[in-house]
Length: 180
Image: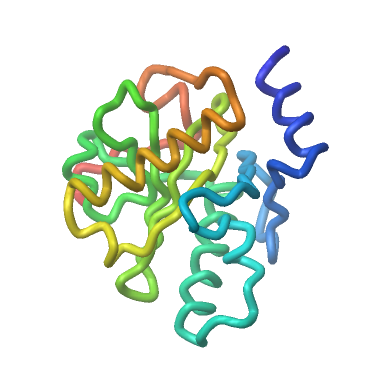
């Protein structure tokens, strides 16, 4: 079964949801799917995007996160760092160690922002798995725990993961930015 077939099955049984853009500003250049699974007591990204009962500040953070997800789908270029340890203000970054093939979408506003962790299923097909608030990721240990949650969740959905040559096999329009 191909990864696209697996994605269709997971969408059909409600474990994945394809991101429908809030306010399309252009054509969809990439696809983004979100896991609906909860892990380690964290609500899913889908839960957080739809939560209307949280504080105004939390709702604003997730409104901005939704805009970042939409930007991944339709922005013609996506900035990524040549070195994930020096990601600066890159839109996305592949996390260390590279063999895990774990990436994060780096939502900066409103400060302190949040991170959405996931993996590519294929070129231009990102599966958003888990999230965490940036203030909870102050150390390498906390980042490793967040990454572990995403890797475990991937294992609940897929048997293998996509590996490519950085960055061209992952993202059309990837821009290696050294000025981050």
